[in-house]
Length: 123
Image 1: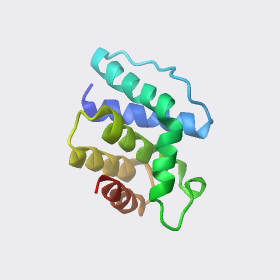
Image 2: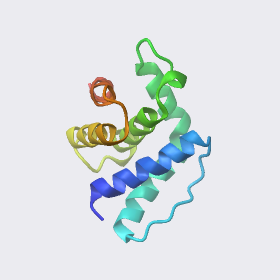
Image 3: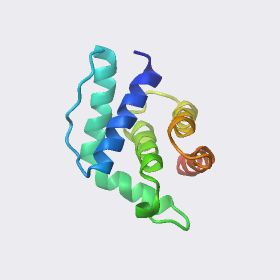
Image 4: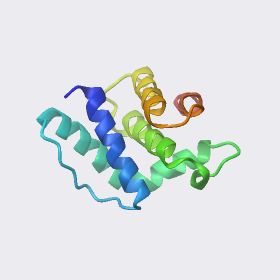
């Protein structure tokens, strides 16, 4: 499984957890490398959930975290985890992957919003 595919699986799991208001680490992935990557993301999600939400809230302008589309929120959470806790990929790659997830799963305006939001966090 490619890293981008593993990232997409992590996004789906995070979305499910945010949507269902659950923070457990239960996952099922057969690919060993992908499993390790996704497990690290989910551990960071569970351990740092409040800090991640605070980072998002502190950087929103004209919105509250509750008003964010859950898909966009999940993509942003995943990107923040990779930027702040995993740190295996360049920031540009993480942001680009987040934008690609938004293009695939979210609204027409989401890629631009997510790109600008994450670029603001990185600066």
